[in-house]
Length: 238
Image (cartoon, rainbow, N blue to C red; front, side):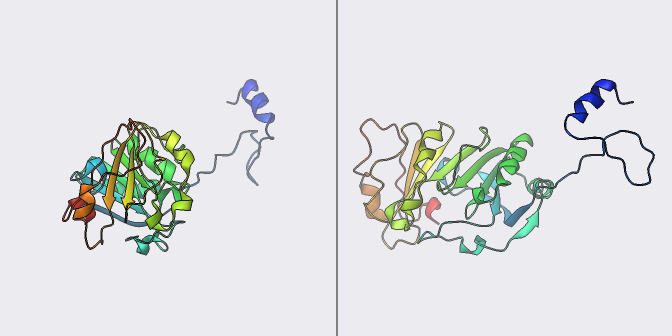
């Protein structure tokens, strides 16, 4: 039975609604449930090949769409298309694989607004969740339990102007910064001072080994970092 207090609080918003033909009860209709809509390119199980989690068995959820067009992008197939999915259907597919690591990736997963509740749902399900993001979109709304693996676009990417520099202030020690380098031109030292930083050469570069011998010349003094300069046949450049 609806109490007078409930009716009083409810009437501040709008009056009770009854279904046509049903007895007038003065009760509220059941709330409409809206399913979260995602576009998913693929969900697959593999070894992580990026950042500090390299080698860990991981379930990857590749979301469709990206506002960037980096010159060396190797996932152009995920720019468009994909299949409609809900958070429940994604979780069901992720659970089919024997991994406790889950990674939201793209293209650019944050280009879909419903990526955020998906990441939270994966955390709630007990997964160690990471997010691979371009750094061009706002990362501040990502669940704090998620490790954000954020790109910082160097000039060779063709998209350096898309860097959202405000994101650097959002990074914590749970997060990592990744910079893909095609040359000695970097990003003028505008990097975070509190996260692990991974630099790696372009995967299809014909000569990777020389880049393992030089340190980016313009890191800030006292920069607390972990820099991994990859060499030929390194697993994270495959």
